[in-house]
Image 1 (tube, helix red, strand yellow):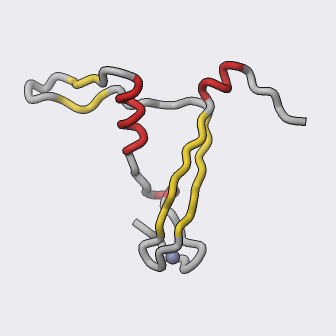
Image 2 (cartoon, rainbow, N blue to C red):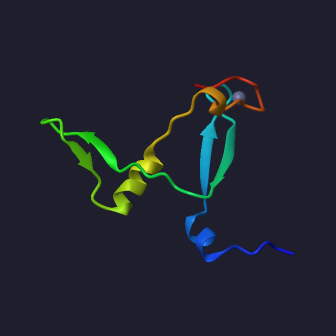
Length: 87
Ligand SMILES: [Zn+2]
């Protein structure tokens, strides 16, 4: 029996697919991350006068979110093929 999701969970839960390529042997791994809430960046940085630049739309925030690729510490990809640590 499948767990029923509330409408709110359907809206806010997400799965992100990440393709990672090993720098050592070019093994490609797919990684999925699932979450219940999405923390979107709403700030793009600062303009020349030092004022914060806020994104204009959810779409823009989403595109900022999906282009961010930071992998370090615990999150670092370890290749199951050649065990080389990437990054
Ligand atoms: Zn490898």
